[in-house]
Image (cartoon, rainbow, N blue to C red; front, side, top):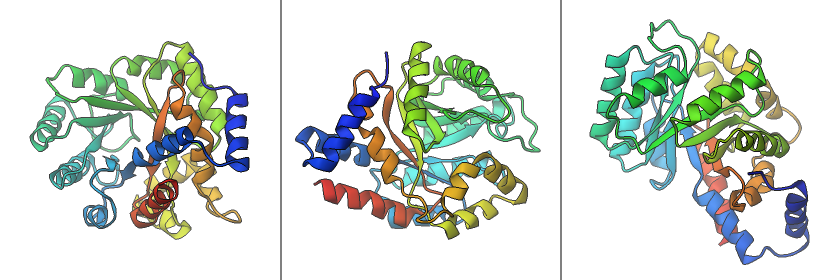
Length: 300
């Protein structure tokens, strides 16, 4: 299995600039924007902001904030599910205390009708935990009658400063056997994504990949959100996402269109793992949804 060739992408991009899009291209782009998922942070006003700006047919995930704790994530996910959203709470190995806590989380999700979760290792906190990493939490989850139909895991196409690429890849291969999809961290270069997806396929991974992109986030909002994570967590966040952060402060700022446009053809390729996009909204939901709607209206 391999990802689309550069030649295929170049032809698509050239045709996009020089000629009207075909019906197939229109359909591909429309599906991309219809199927976008939004990630939100469990702050005090998140529920009301989602209700104000996000249609109930948009998939949501609720991140596990070290400053707020695992239960805040589940509580918000349950509340949003009650409003009719399809929502997946993040389960963090560093925030789920033990198997009893995990069973309580699963029970709360089941009662709320939540069918999807997203399992991460997470940043270390002061919370004592029995789980060393995401794989340990996944194994414990599968020992329960969890009932989830979707279990997502994270991917690091651009690597991690503290872990070698081979260790990261092998860890992902191990987790993939216990999951149903992969969502990447924020990436800006489509070549990085396609090469990474090819490596996954070569290692026998066949799960659909959702590419992480920032939404239409303002610079002011990004600073406010990073500050709201708490001083220590904000520093960790910015140190891991420096590439993303500084793009918001370059002339013209950041626009997600380029990456989405470059990778959209891959979504339609049968031999590509790339299945769609996951938008990190940083709770800037109004502008992000307006950006999605503009594209859908333009394609219609």
